[in-house]
Length: 47
Image (tube, rainbow, N blue to C red; front, side, top):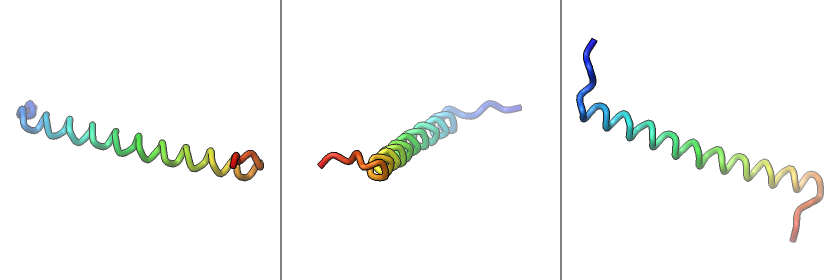
C-alpha cells in the first residue's frame, strides 16, 4: 500500500467538492422544477 501524495490528495478533495457543488445545484434545479410542475398541475400557481 502506498499513501497518496499531497498533490493527489488536494486534487481528489477538489474533485469531490466540485462534484458535490454540481450535484447540489442540479438537485436544487430538479426540485424547484418538480415543485413548479406540481403547483401547475394542481392549479395553485400564483400570478
